[in-house]
Picture 1 (cartoon, rainbow, N blue to C red):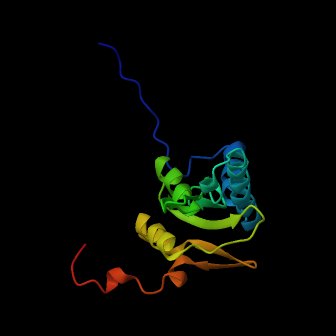
Picture 2: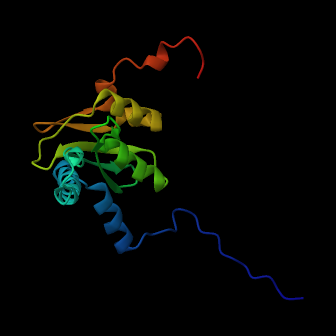
Length: 169
């Protein structure tokens, strides 16, 4: 019979992350507002390049708004709005959140939406509710609302309707 190998057990005190891992972790944690805004603007500019090749009038508002978010894991996801003349469409925050979920994450640390010119747009009520419902801890998400200001989502969505609903969900 072969002898079984003894595997040393390491405690968390024994674990020392590599320098590369420490740098990677630090970089992920330092996504500042300006960098996030640039990501949103870049998403919008890319979409507008596609729109510019279209002659149809119903393409005029596609990609007009871009959104960027950073998760609690430090990953950045971007999205653009789609707004068709027939009324079908969605906000840029929706496509950024969808990309995040597709990658297995739900917790948003910070989010911003902007036009290609850099005009910051606070999320609409529908987006605020969606962000909260994706993960209740997102009530702490920092929402960049313009002029260098940001607020936690809970302040932009102060009266959670679910607290007043008379049936359990």
